[in-house]
Amino acid sequence: MAGILAAVRLRLLLAISVLLAPLAGCGVFGGPDPEGAASDFLQALARGDAMAAGALTDDPGAATERIQQVRGELEPERVRIALDRAEESESAEGAASATFTATWELGQGRQWRYQGSFDLARADTEAGWSVRWSPSVLHPDLSAQQTIALREELPDPAPVVGRDGDPLLTAETVVPVVVETGQAPAVAAPLAEALNRFDEDITEESIVQGAADAPQRQPYTVAVLREDDYKSARGQIYELPGVTFPSQQRLLPPDRDVAPQLLQGLRDELQQRLAGAAGWRVVTVDTVGAEVATLAGQSPRPAPTVSTSLSRELQAVAEDAVEPAGGQAMIVALQPSSGDVLAVAQNAAADAEGSLALTGRYPPGSTFKIVTAASALQAGQLTPQTPVDCPATTTINGYEVPNIDRFELGTVPFRTAFARSCNTTFSQLAAGFEPDQLTRTAQQFGIGADYDIAGTTTLTGEVPPAQDEIGRAANGFGQGQVLTTPFGMAMVASTVAAGGDAPTPQLIRGIPTEVNEPAGPPLDPAAADVLPAMMRQVVTEGTATALNGLGDVHGKTGTAEYSPDGSHGWFVGYRGDLAFAVLVVDAGSSGPAVEAAGRFLTAGGE
Image (cartoon, rainbow, N blue to C red; front, side, top):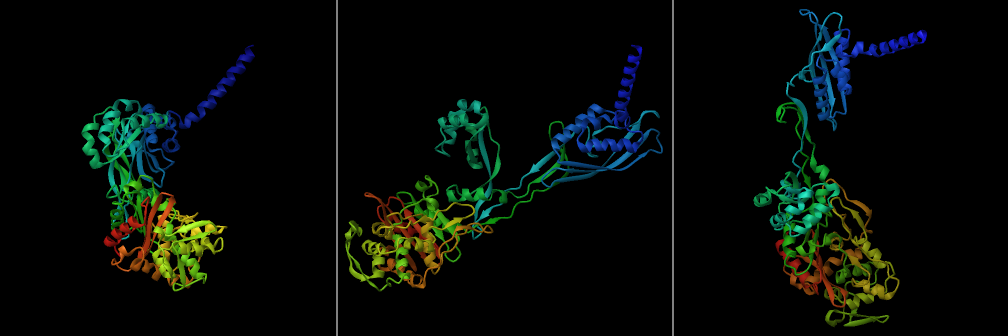
């Protein structure tokens, strides 16, 4: 038994000696020489082992706590610390000093590099060396009762400007109104009373429901107010329990009603590009969090201004033009020579339903006769001078097609039937087309093309092939299965103005439009060369004479029936390098669209 116990004691002594061996070089007693002790300390500090680094000092508790605080605040991706020098003092026995170079990689390209120093001491000749602890060991400017913090500084978002440099989106201070979900029922009534004037959808019920639906009981943002609006409501809401107001910078239009459907998409698309490069600072802070000194950093770098194709002046003119319309009304304006989107305007009734000007699909009515005419002209079926019949009604396989108010012209040149908008002429013409003839011609105007325009979503429309005469006849005057958007019809007008070659639309400078489905080939000269004169005749002696006298306006009116009792009003056209489409939903005739076009052209530019 005695032999067994002796063997156990021997094994225990061996195990203890193995455990103590590393402590002799890097434990609480420090290294056997200043260089070893300093190196061990800096290695532990670099790898983030606060306890090991603290144990190598003469105040392990305080050192460990402060190192943990600094590492936790900075959250470095990597720390590299090189020992530059360590040597004993020539004048004081048991004293030494060390210098080092530290490089902290703080992520996102942020690097903090500095030189530091500290003292070491040895209690007696038998003990190892240890670091004499003070906060300045971590950085020479860190004092007692201080710690280090990382501050991020965001630049103001870069502005978004129009083609003439006019601001469309600029950085403004906004104030979110945020309520703790548990307090929402108690404060919903006064919040709704104060905020409903800014957004009529904010009610006591909506606040309670929104807070209840907030994920994981997170605070609910009731509204985001412009700074002036917040100041006007502050007295009513500032003292409400559980309500906070964390102000921030956000890109906003000069006027809240300026192209909301378009500018929101622009802001979302450009968010990262507009953000710029954040600045940062490593600072010392006192016990209450107040900054004492800046140790390192880089100023924020604003992103460059983003330019768009939009014309702020033309946008305002377009908005003024559609606002008086009784129903939903909208205008899309393009520059034919470049494809630049110049303006997208909707009145309040249209805004309530979304981005109708760009994605709302409607039958184009007689404005589609531009496409039908082009299809017949470039196929060699007729010329503008070819005599055609324009009876009050015509019947195609039992399908009766009347003119508006059943007017009749008898036999007239094709250009006159176009200018006066003879449904009977165009239905007869289209009935004889090939099933996909209108489909292919429409593609030449950009209808059916698919564009991925950075900053917005657009649809051009569709013209399905028609296998039967009745379908082709209805499609020929913009009824049947033809559906387009105001954006698509602005492309039609642009194609004529551009000499028959459909332009590729563009919105943000420097971000080319992706063409997923291209427009068809340019129009044949047989159509491209004569359509401008035919569209001019619509204004001088056809269905849009109300616009005569407003310059060299070319266009086409349209009344698009969608039910026995309902129809939309259209006008599409161009003047100089400005092409546009106007739609007034449920207008009953093209008259309201022509009136809106008149307001637009009267106040608009070339």
